[in-house]
Amino acid sequence: MADKIATREAYGNALAEFGSDNRIVVFDADLSKSTKTDNFRKKYPERFFNMGIAESNMMASAAGMAACGKIAFASTFAVFAAGRAFEQIRNSICYPNLNVKIGASHAGLSVGEDGASHQAIEDIAIMRALPNMTVISPADAIETKYAVKAAIEIDGPVYLRLGRLGVPVIYDENVYKYEIGKGIALAEGSDATIIATGLMVHGALEAKSLLQQEGISVRIVNIHTIKPIDIDIIVKAAKETGAIVTAEEHNIIGGLGSAVAEVLGEHYPVPILRIGVQDKFGKSGKPEKLMEMYGLTAADIAEKVKCVLQMKK
Amino acid sequence: MNKHDIRELKRYAAKVRIHIINEVFSAASGHPGGSLSCADILTALYFAKMRVDPKRPLWEDRDRFVLSKGHCTPALYAVLAERGFFPKEDLLTFRNIDSYLEGHPNMRSVPGVDMSTGSLGQGISAAVGMAMAGRLDKKGYRVYAIIGDGEIQEGQVWEAFMAAAHYKLDNLTVFLDYNGLQIDGRITDVMSPEPVADKFKAFGWNVLEADGHDFEKIIKSIDQAINTEGKPTIIIAATIKGKGVSFMENQAGWHGSAPNREQKDQAITELSKALEELEVE
Image 1: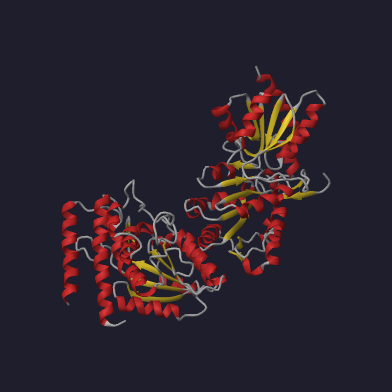
Image 2: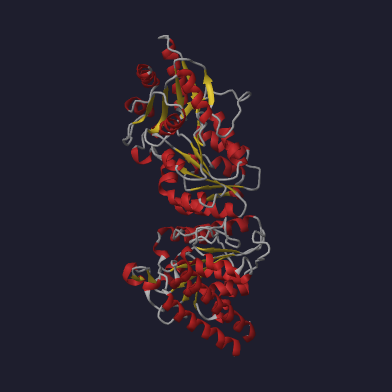
């Protein structure tokens, strides 16, 4: 766990690495240095299109490209992708099931200093409600790289949720295998399971260490694909550990926690508690301070596990 | 275009207008006013100018068409059916639950529909993307779109216009169906987009004006667009909402309502008479 790499950086690098396919085109809305699509532009300038600060037109233009056989990536901040351009994504991309991949960077509170206007805390909820949409929230640079590869390979719309902040690399590339819709059990445990996504996966692993010191054994599951969600791995965790804590850098309404609660409610009800933003907007500040203020640290997750253990019969 | 060809186009347009009324009547819903106003433009595109093959609706090198004012499906479907993309009988299933002829264009269910539209302002952006793709692939196909005059109140239209000029998309030709009316009344009363020609010019487009019910002028404008290099073309087409049905002409109320049986019969009588006159000329 040496270097920290932001998932947006890994996204830009992956576009450049896998970008030789002539069908791939990349759009950005004046944020290519931030979303890192500039890494693709440097290598394939003829297939990079800056659409200016006009996200709605960018999304629907990407749909037009896809309708002509292209694999179109369209990038901007998550707030503007899922928010500003929501209806373009709905009507011009998802309804006709076009091959557009939305690389949405700067998701969550870890945007930091830019504050609430730029911190998407509702994008998972919005995007997973769209028919035909696949929603991916990678945990580290390795996972991002292979999520981009998978997004290129599948036909249809994909929402890739990416972060601004550098995060520890938790996977070994030599053994890592990405499969859309398949969660990954990162660590075994018997008392409860922490199901996490995005940069909270690292927090979940730290929480496991904290809990271990108190003799509590938790399983860690990384849900990198929030839709379609891996029902099997969630039900298995519920059956074998009897209690669930979810952890996400997103509103507790509509995100991973909700998706997991839906699965448990319909398939195997067990106690569940959700770590996430408690239905309020973010604010400016250092990312680490924000994570503390909003209750998203490893210590917060560990506390939540102890609470959920109290709920087990 | 000789006189014979023009008369042929007029005949197709007359048939298209009859289909429009029958579609909307059989569905008991739909948008006759704007469909009748863009019927001649669509007929000119599909019967005189666009390179399409009804047997191969997904032919890679075909010219593309985007109905950005997507509610005018009765006109688009009528033209596609007359052009041979699907059986004309199917037009009477328009908007039915067991039909593939969705209320607004669905590229996945209707042969010949190149883009799903319906939410105003989005189709024009998709057309921009298609023109960019054609350019990138060095394909010779052209992209056509029709936008509504009320539709240009959507901000996204101007984002698309900015992008098309920026990328010098001279393979893109857009018709503005300028019938002057929208649901709530005259566009100049609801939210005036004027002066439209000046605005399009200022956005870097080649701007042409034509009578949207005069085939010679429509076709001449398309030819001028094809011969224009370095910028996209918009043809501001002066049209009449409800064109061809006396009681529908210039009435905003016929934007999105279906005729009753009596009104339908009267409309069909008028339109059939117009068609008969073209047959004996």
